[in-house]
Image (cartoon, rainbow, N blue to C red; front, side, top):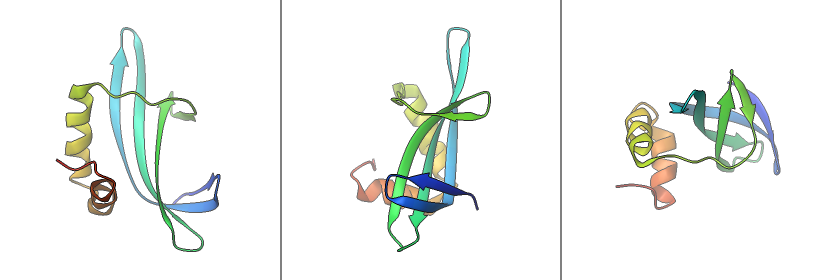
Length: 90
């Protein structure tokens, strides 16, 4: 499990799913991660990556990419549950 830095301090990645996307010639990956802070709080982080490097900035998903995200979340039950609790379920 990877350790990352968040505005709330260090956290461990518990689960991660990614969705490959393309806009014209540009290729990138949207990532959704379930993190846990040192004090046990769970966090959900959205980011995108180009050439394997995580980037900051807005994350935009087309409707068809959301379908891919839902499919990827089938393999990550805790992350799916966390998003469902945030009002993201079907």
